[in-house]
Length: 254
Image (cartoon, rainbow, N blue to C red; front, side, top):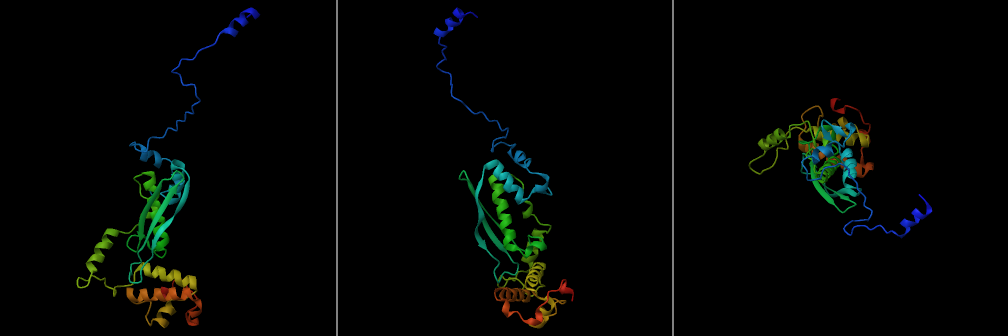
């Protein structure tokens, strides 16, 4: 192109149609379905790793990660109400309300409980912690709008049968439960954990302090009294009698 030809274009102004948007636009296509789409559940479930699943159900740790991945940063996560087991509740039921709040202002709360009828024995001694984890899982899956149940909410026990059996034991005269029935596994596990923490021989505690043979039938009421005594010992370790000191594994078989 000659110099004269080049100068011809100096006087030409290119016009843009008035209906054309010339602003810079960021176009991001994440490929994710809308949260209201039927495919949403499958999409979210595909984000969990194998280590974040147990028997087809997401673990709470995985729910936390995926929730932040999909919904944004969690700015608050914790129990807002805690109802510990009551002294007259020999089933050790604990209930927790848990709230999760995201940076964008979304807030989700859920409630869950833990007792010997809906929790595997190894976790019954940690009723409040287990109920809290379950409630957190429920809040997170509500936020994610998935149909799956958190793995921590599951149990190998037949809860429906346990509830039916308890209902059958109910005293129709006053609506109470039969405290004379055998100490539950949950109570035994709780006593064992406390004895281990305090360095107490459970067998000697039963025989010396409560005059009962730990190898024989022990009522739920007596077990509840023993739990109360162990809680007192935990509050003031100086009150623990020397003769009961010395934790022994499998003390129930002594």
